[in-house]
Length: 241
Image 1 (cartoon, rainbow, N blue to C red):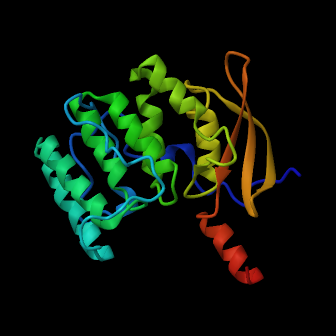
Image 2 (tube, rainbow, N blue to C red):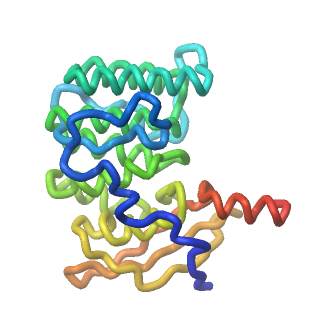
C-alpha cells in the first residue's frame, strides 16, 4: 500500500538549520532540548563513543533526573563545549545520559563534541545511536549528513546500512525527516531520490518503507518509525488509538 506523507512538515533547510559549516558555539542557553543538537565541526579520537549508546535502553546507575534537570545538564554541557572544553562537555553529557536515558538529545551532543575534536567516526556512532531509538532531534539528521564525507569507508557503510531492516528502523521526529534521510544520508552522498513510499505492518507496528534511487544507480530500501510525528500523533488521538 502506497501512501503519501501526511505532511512534509520539515524542509531540508530546516533540518540543516545550524548544521552548515561547524558553528563556533551552541544556540543560546534557553534553546530547547530538540534544538540543542547543533551542528558540529570536528570530532575526536580520544573520547570513545558511549559503549551502551546503541542500545534501546540502558541501565541507569544514578538517580533518574527530571526533565528540567536533563535540560539543565544539556545547558551546562553546551557551555563547556562553547568554551572549548570538549572532554568536560562529553563527560557532562554522558553523566546526563546515565540519568536521563535515551531520547533526550545527549547522544547527539556527545557526537557534536566528538566532531569538534576531529573524531567523525565516533560522532557518527553517537548520531546513529540517537536515531535508532525514539526522540532524536532534527539537527541530529543534519549533523550526520554533514559528516558523511569525513567518515571512514567502514563507518560510511554502517550509516548506509542503517534502517534497512524493519526490526531496526530509523526513528524520525516527523515524516519530513524520512525524505531528508533519503536525499542526504541513505546513499552515503547527497542526491538520493525516493521512488515510492509504502505503509507496512511489522510486529503490529506501522512503519514507512521508502524505495530510494541513488546517484550511482543502486537502490535501497529504508524503514522508518514515524510514530513521533506530531500530526500522526494527533490523528491517532482523534481516532482513539
